[in-house]
Amino acid sequence: DAGVIQSPRHEVTEMGQEVTLRCKPISGHNSLFWYRQTMMRGLELLIYFNNNVPIDDSGMPEDRFSAKMPNASFSTLKIQPSEPRDSAVYFCASSLALVAGYTQYFGPGTRLTVL
Amino acid sequence: GQSLEQPSEVTAVEGAIVQINCTYQTSGFYGLSWYQQHDGGAPTFLSYNALDGLEETGRFSSFLSRSDSYGYLLLQELQMKDSASYFCAVSTPDSNYQLIWGAGTKLIIKP
Image (tube, rainbow over the protein chains, first blue to last red):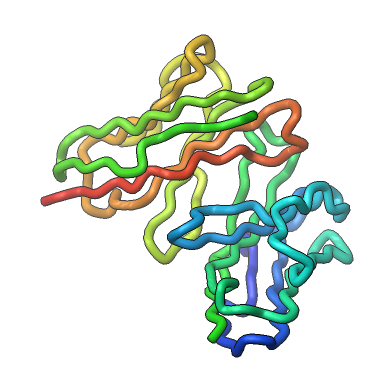
C-alpha cells in the first residue's frame, strides 16, 4: 500500500498567490482530514470529510481557505490569496471510520512557505 | 468542553524508562491512542487502548484507566531514536470519526 500521498512536498510562494495542496488517501478509507502544524499553534484540524462530504470546517481559518473532495481518492486544500502567516506544514490524513480507535494515517506533509 | 492534557516536555537518559501521561475530559469515550512524530516527519500511530490495563508492544507499552480518565505511554530501554513528540488522542461516540488531540509531549533523550 502506498500510504497517503501528498503533493507538492515543498511549496514556496509569494504573498497574494494562490496555493493548491493535493492529497490522495489510502484506498478504501472513507474519512479524510486536513491538518496544519506550526511551532506556535501545534497541530490544528482544519477540515475533515466522511464519504467525500465535508463534516466540520470550523477549523478553517478564514474564507481564504477552501477544501474539496470530488471523489474518494482525491482532495485539495486551496489558499487564495496566501499570506505569510499561512506558512506551516500541512498534513493530510485518512482513516477507515469503522476501525476501532479511528486510527489515522498521515501523509508526509506539504511544507508551505509564503514570502 | 473536551480536552486532553499531557506534559509539554519530558527529559530522560538513554537506556532509562520514561512515562508520558495523558488525562482527558470528554463527553463519552471509545479509546485512547498514541502517535509519535519525529522532527520533520508526520505523526505515526503507535497504540490504541479501549479497555483498562496495559498493552505491550516491544519496548513501548500503553496503559489506560477509564475510571480515572487517564492513560500513559511507557518507553523502556530508551534509544536516541525515540527522541520525538508523542501525542495522545481520544475517540468518542460524539466525535463523528475524528480524534480529539492532546498538544503533544516533546521527549528529549540525553546520552
